[in-house]
Image (tube, rainbow, N blue to C red; front, side, top):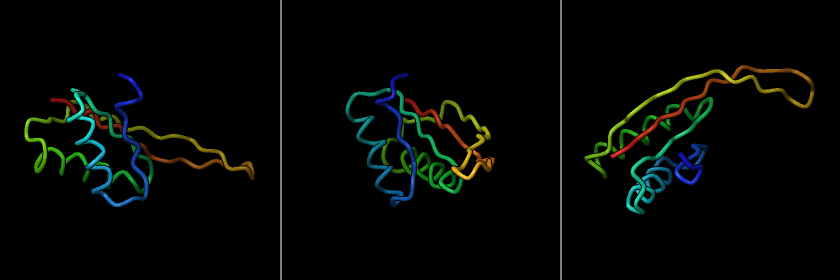
Length: 90
């Protein structure tokens, strides 16, 4: 899976990411990966569901992986941040 098919979810409106996923599928990709961390996880789930239910009916969620990443700040402190990877395909 190439990095070209990966959509990183951040703070932008949900429909921006939905458009990015739909564009990937319409551009010929059969697989798209949606990645998010922390508070953006719920937005990533929303993106996958909106794409699947409204725009590309034949798209399916193939795999969901959850993890905890340890991020270190410049002050030396570390924090655990949850992450999710949603693999979608036709």
